[in-house]
Amino acid sequence: MKDWLLMTVMGMLGLTACHSSKEATQQTAEPADAAKEVVPRNEAALMYGVPTMDFVLKGRVIDTKGEGVKGMQVILLNGSVDITPENMHEDNPYVKEYINQSSDTTDAEGYFSCQMKDFPKDVHSVIVRDVDGAENGEYRDQMVEVNFADGEQTGVRRGWYQGVRTKDVDITVKKVSEE
Image (cartoon, rainbow, N blue to C red; front, top):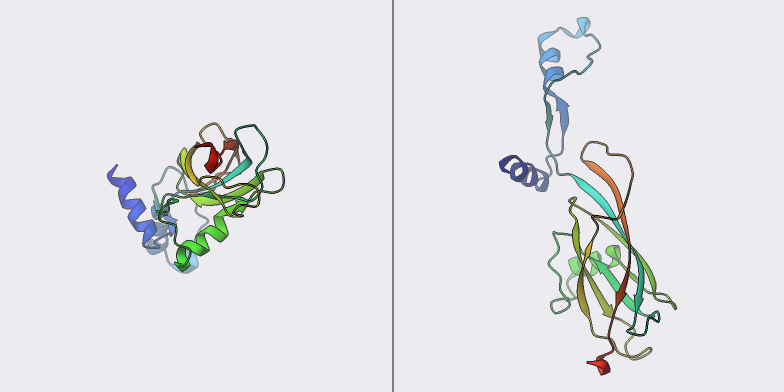
């Protein structure tokens, strides 16, 4: 636990270098003209950083009748963002930029696809909000949890990068008049 916390703090500070402790010892012990090819075997790696993974959320926003809902914004949140439907202030440049990068608006049939990068974890929050107003009826903004644990895992693990996890979901929303 202590190592994980230390790695997280160091990653937040931007310390993301990697190299082998064996290579460092050999490089300082041998003159430059006598350098040999170093084949790392069973030595400790000195790594500073934070594991990351790309998360892709695809699916459809539907109403209580199972019909696709157009004009709904779906925002996939990572752990470093403290946004809820109640505290979304798009006049904040950080919030506005995050929404632009990690959200999608549903098409005429309710389909969306959004992605973000985060620390590898199973459950992520998603905000669904009505951004077209009364055009298709007014829907209540909501926050839901999506479990990516059983999502499709792709990509090769390289160092701190853990690949891509994709999840397909249907999110049901209610009209304000239905409540």
